[in-house]
Image 1: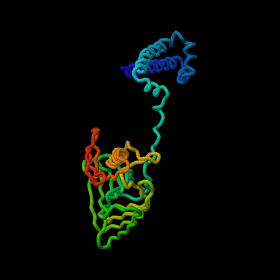
Image 2: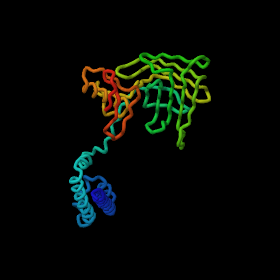
Image 3: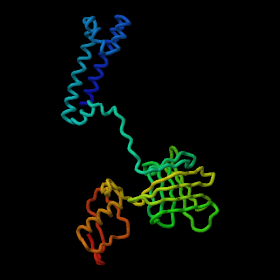
Image 4: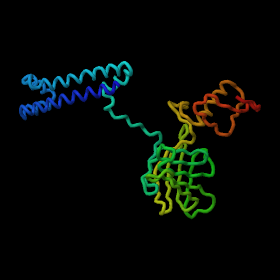
Length: 291
């Protein structure tokens, strides 16, 4: 209701001003041009009050619903009214800095590829563009194992023996499901990644698929090695992930049982949404425990 009153009041004020300009042009082109500049409009009103006052009354009539609407908004949501009056809605939102430093050149399926998410977890290197359930474009490289330390890997199309599996997927315009390609040979890959504290890898990335796939990527990437996030050097416990849950549980158990040997299950713990109780089996000094 308050929004309708504010909009109605503004429309009446604008209609009154437009009427005033039309009346001024009726008196002469110079008066009309002068009224197009709001600071000069009072001069026309003073010289032609009897002729122009009806437009002024219409604008004044619009002030009534405007003031009532603002008063209602102030009583219901004063912070919103303050934001409107301070013109914060005119200011552009600050552009958030990307979490990862990724600078790739080239294309995926003939389209530019700009991943925002990158990780190497459980031996799978993933570069993902898009925040939806299905990525707009994604590259996944399945390694033999999760590296611990620097990672350097070179693969040529004619190499023999075990090689990483490369999976490329993209979501075509208007499609509900992505298309995907899986390659075990015939591609070129170069990785030279070095660890950076606390949980990142950074370095060179080059991938060239056979010509028919129209995929060539080259540049530098930065990626996470787990699903923990840090803020000011500390683990951000607000980040929703299985690794965050495991960290919180381990921290709790270590503080509850100081000086004891603690073993958490090797299986990945999964968050339970809004459920605040998490069943947990663990070992304490070699003895099975349950919470």
